[in-house]
Length: 565
Ligand SMILES: *[C@@H]1O[C@H](CO)[C@@H](O)[C@H](O)[C@H]1NC(C)=O
Ligand SMILES: *[C@@H]1O[C@H](CO)[C@@H](O)[C@H](O)[C@H]1NC(C)=O
Ligand SMILES: *[C@@H]1O[C@H](CO)[C@@H](O)[C@H](O)[C@H]1NC(C)=O
Ligand SMILES: *[C@@H]1O[C@H](CO)[C@@H](O)[C@H](O)[C@H]1NC(C)=O
Image (cartoon, rainbow, N blue to C red; front, side, top):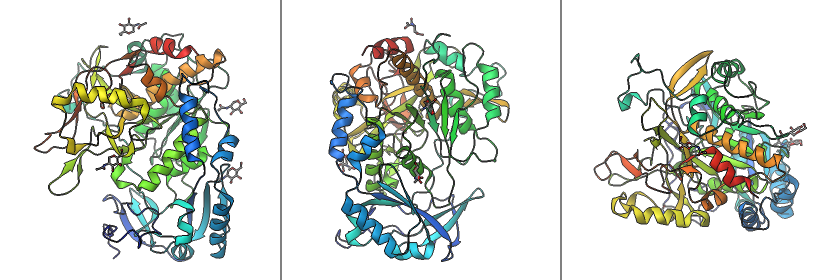
């Protein structure tokens, strides 16, 4: 019963039996790199997050459409957090039922958020296991870090189920993140030890390629941008300062993070933590930057969920957020993904732009059964309400040439979210133009949200870690802050003109039909190594494609296209 890899939810049960299982399709397999230490003692404390059912989600979605459609008279008329709260807050009956259920179990130590749709409660393992029948709280360790999760699916009483979307803190192990590959170029035949190869992507190279001049830096009052990271590693202020000393000579910049939200650990700094901050502050130069990092208050918390909860509790937030977090869609429950998607809508109606890395596994590969493979979409990359950023390489890695597909660039079609209207004709155009060479239809879901939306270089970056410049850092967690920084600069110019910020980018981005972007038309990304597709997913093509989206930003042209109204 309690083996670390056990307990797959038996899907054969009738839906009736499972009605109290909010996340009936949640995969509760323990990832192999986590080891179970043992069951929690009854008196040990947990922190659980109750996601209460919201109201007016249809109105929220419609509002997001009009405030982000440049052809709508409502364009840019964003909502304040209080207005979002009065729209979506759970009904009084929902709040009463959930609260009295908790109180009846002696759970009174709860915090809420401005929008009232999350409750974070501290309770003992003993109480939690009674409250949520089925749950069994265990401690797991990986690399010296421990977390608490339930080894079995939880349920809630039927009369409570209708008032909740899910309960956080039981499942979903922290993913490894999009690990920046340190040796990806080796596999392309470039030797790290080759003395001739000192070239790689630096802020100067990016600014040259994307046509940013020394004058393209931020200056608006109260513009700001943020990176969010949920890895067990920390950014180092000294590394950022050193990075800017090495690479920031040609443009005005800031060398310090403005605000860290969350706990900064004392462990040694990590490559990815350094990467995000160093590069958003190089394209979004001179713009105050916030860092959202592991809250790490309790072993039972889910860092990404904590970030989503925080957004609903802060009225004053940076306009652009770049996030390197992703997980396979098939490992997450539909209820969780739908609710998080609603959280993205709540951010979008406030004028926030959320950019997610598309992932580093190309189309991915999911062994659905012994006989069947399919591609493996990643969430939140697959959410229709975020902007997803893929990756490219220079055609010739040693000079600033045009860009081709970086074979790791995540892309594909969601199995959960329908294709949004804003991209329907772009995707149809792609599917028609490459119809003869598409992978078999059984590998992907043509009716799903297709991603990425845009791309940037993701290969061979220089990063400063522990005071030392490190070469060959790669991944879409590099391209995402680079693109985010550029949108942040455009917001800056818009704020200077008294225009609203860009908010949710996709409706306007797709209306450009590739104008102001460098179209990426060469190369394919990786996928299943099986006989049918032989390691190849989708291929880039003229106009939009599910490998590099619309292409990479030509900054002055993009600014020109997005600065009028
Ligand atoms: C949300 O912010 C309020 C203060 O504005 C605070 O009292 C409350 O505890 C916060 N909620 C959470 C979940 O942190
Ligand atoms: C931007 O860069 C491209 C390619 O590097 C170049 O062809 C173009 O002339 C540059 N300038 C503008 C304003 O687009
Ligand atoms: C905007 O400016 C105010 C006052 O200087 C500051 O408190 C606030 O944090 C700023 N907001 C952002 C998102 O940077
Ligand atoms: C394909 O995507 C749609 C949503 O667009 C979903 O309803 C359907 O279940 C998906 N099919 C599969 C086989 O996952």
